[in-house]
Length: 267
Image: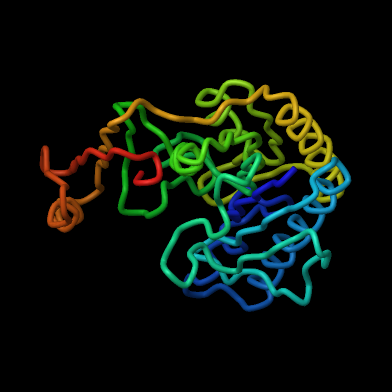
């Protein structure tokens, strides 16, 4: 069984402050940034080991937070069955390097809920410029976008790990998906949650459950009806104007653009 782990950072176990996640912002001290990156690395290593113990014979890890570059390979769990991608795109610009029809299941790890989610820790969808992203009229976040992309290769999205509201979002979108909620927002910039060891035990349990479900064919790929209408509501008129200049994109009001796509991977 081949598992693809797509890692973000806002939902990583033990990360409870904005500074640990958005460490590039002005005023964040270097040691705070390093603490956040260590928690990400520890979460990845624990999850990878759990997947192998649960029966995966190959695991692909993709570091995607802010485009990647958050992990150091000399600190990662080393095994011939594990492949690491340190950026979210390959040399040819293709998103999710290594994702193809040989992958049995996609796990979205360290995730957060979509833009506009009330009571969430650092909610957004890809960029702070987007207020909402819709596929065929249904509002989705990064979870939905990534699951749709994987659907092109008939890959089911089998697990989400992260904030409780990210898990709720996934459960409402994908029937049968396994989730591991490890934290809860106190406000936009702060959250509380399980200690790291407890979180890792929960994630291991859920990874095993997800792999079993995948083996039994209990989770289907997320494949919205084609052709898909993709609608993006921007936060500013300027962003909408800039987006409308791209090929096949039309502006439908002051803040919103829309396009139609024929493949799930074009989302």
